[in-house]
Amino acid sequence: KVLKRTLVVPDEKSDFEWTGMFDTYFDIWDLSSLNENYDIDWSTGLDGSLTDVKMQATGCLLSLPASQTLLEKGPSEWIKLDKKCPDAIHLNYNMFTCNQQHQYCGDKEAQMEAYNIYSHLKLSPSLLQYIPSKRPQFTGLGYDEMAIHSRRAGEGMYKWEICIDGTRKTCLSHMKVGSGNGNKFCDDRTLKGNCAIWADLNYQIKSRRFFKPNLKDYKFVLANDGTHDWDLDFKGQYIAADNSEWLRDLDERFKKEFPSGKYDFDKQPLADAIGVSGYMKKELSKWKQKDLNLIWGTADALSATLLDLFSLVDSKYLLG
Image (cartoon, rainbow, N blue to C red; front, side):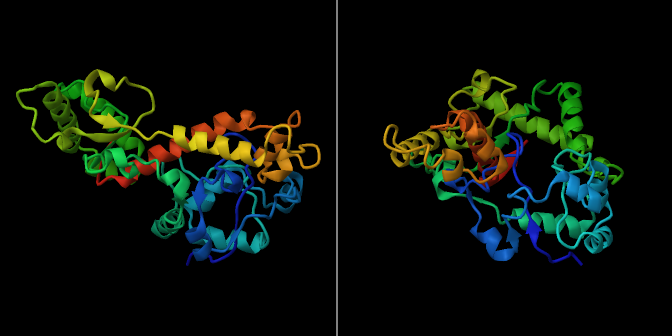
């Protein structure tokens, strides 16, 4: 069975790791459901007591191969490691993923446990309100029906060799190596269907002859990675999540709570006032910061990415 033990969350020490879960001032997450269902330890390690040297000496600092083995072998390996490291296990800043893109290793039980944990992660109301389907100006216009991730798999139209080759590569990268599911889910018939949807959507939007009166049929939410100019074919047909207002609200709230010329940053440095994670404390300590400029780009990128991701799962249908 899956071990029921306290989950110690690794401290965020770099821009790449930062998710804002420790730094609640930014109000990015709603973790109430997660904390209600699991015993989460958000404090162990923040004081620097779990140093790499100390953890390595105990054998509880995992290498990348060791962390992958932990997942691939499932519960039997967890029990062994739990006996060896009963207090804490240092993940060594490794993401628990396998070689496959966006995949978790392990047996079915391990994958379902990971899924159960992630199902409790929710965006805070202050950020969630900016998902397109939640915006009043888009209500009832069909933007909650279909979401599209930005791979333009339909490029090449019905020239199957162009469309299918690229789509198959993406499809196979999401399959577990050696599972045999590639032939089952990435076969020519399925890939042609995916390409045909793109071709149909593209053609009917451009052709007024086949354009349906109901514009909802052609509207979608887009999570775009910037690899294509979507306006060329779909201008006016899609919307994307916009974090601009959320950033403006954050800036206004910060200025009210830490007014320039009135707040004593020497008496209570900003790093102590709002910083919790290692990354945030480090950034706000640089040159005795009196604003959020040094972390603004990180907060922007994270909030924009999360809005995109939650917009995709908010829709009834997803085409990727």
